Length: 441
Image 1 (cartoon, one colour):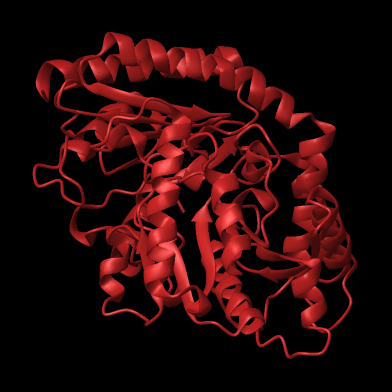
Image 2: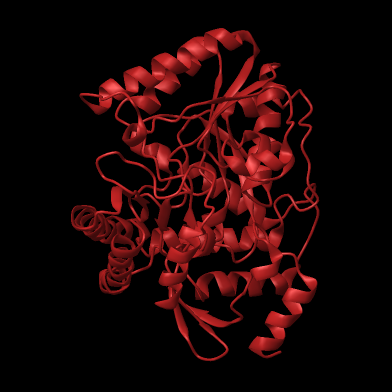
């Protein structure tokens, strides 16, 4: 099929996610290599969001490709109750990368399934039913994960499942209270969370679920002391701490997993995306040794036909090996420093940039109408004039491919990007921000 035939067939027969179908215009992709992909007319695009923040190693990684081919030649599938070498190897490799308190992995197909099964496991293990999660969060859009989600993508699932309770993120930039330090901010947010735990009844709360660093909703990095403080509250009240590492895991933030930045040990960790970089779907739930031991004598009421799919796990083994052998963490931290410096310059130079947040190669530019009032460029959950879509379009014209959410531009390129490539691409962002300053404020 040629490009236009692919597009017309998709428009006639395919429903595209998160879209009003009438005006979508998918780019037919012919090939990809590294941080770039090409359409059928030979135009080259730069993938500056790693697709959906999952293609950490970019297009065409030969190690992952070969692992998939080798597994195909052996067998593509055997059920979860049978022994598959790739499943065994990946499970061990993941546990070896985790804190010494972690015990076993339950494999899923994606992040939403990982979070749903983490909730089920927490409820089975604790015998409690309530689950805390944050308003500015996205944990997936299936029914269980969608009830965990706090932002407007949950609305289509309402009225929701009983027992899901929301609390506020430590979003210091937008807080009405002025804090003298990050520690003071953490003290405030932790006090409010503890108050809410008391009002909801600690004996009914199974788990607190958090994106370790809030992703699409703004790259909200917890202030100093916040994550250890949540860990202490969980210990105090007998609540499980679940870290959603679907987007932040696998080197994205400059650590193998983002919780390592905060010197904490979660009870449960969920993952997906970067474990295979999207080459084959895979996700999972890592549980502590204590939780794993509980299910030695209690039924684990979780199951999926494709749990630990051999093809996916083969890709996962190759992918995780590549992170280590190619020193991807080293590149993330080196190039991530350049990203941070460039974003700070944008914040200084552009009236439309209210704040920039970054860690590793995980960043957001928050757009405002006024630096003084911090009024968002578009209202929360709304964009009646399609302003953010227009900004995305301006970037797309320059072949800089990413996505926006609320009033944020997300920049999360493949972790193999070089400093030279990054600097070239950020010049395009500078051009677009200049237009926003002139035409949208």
